Image (cartoon, rainbow, N blue to C red; front, side):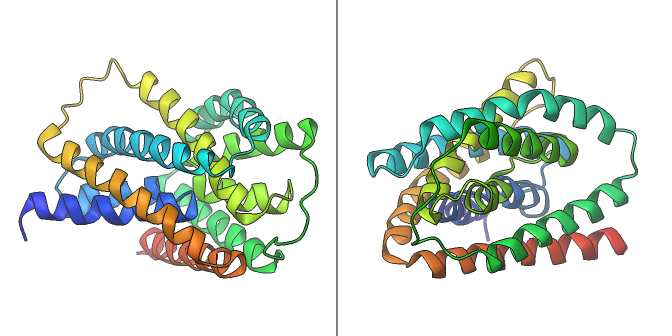
Length: 248
């Protein structure tokens, strides 16, 4: 399979995940760029931020037009996590990579289990409270900074279980959080000397954007409980793969 075709297929899958589930893009993009497209880890991380920023912003617009974004909650969530993310990233640099990978896997598994236990919210949601949103956002920022990921796959469970959003509102709002976090991380890397292969990144990003539109349409056709269970299964799969990698 050609490199261009691999980039298109991987981009479409990642866009579908972001559009339908509101997360998982950064988790899928980095290994796809490294193992399928031969990027270095440093280049893959930066390229992933470009791809996820563009794709999540596109998916955010789509969800916003459908009324699935809780702007006040999302802004508080994203803003509250910036300083904790920076602090956690500094601490994480002192720990062994295997320890971080195993801890990440455990966190993802716990988030998935919480989603499986949480009623899939066709129930009336609780009104968003600024203090709860800020506290949850700070916690998510800490996890994001500690593990170096976009955090959308953790934002959705937090928005559902902590703030009581319905699953579709949580998906849309998580895209706001992902967009803000990815832009901030990308700005921090603006002066990096890491070379980027735009001949791969551009089609990858284009396919991801198209996939995000399809993912949003898919989300409207699947019931809340089914979407929530699907998201939990994705999290458990990611956790199992990362734990295996940490132990081998």
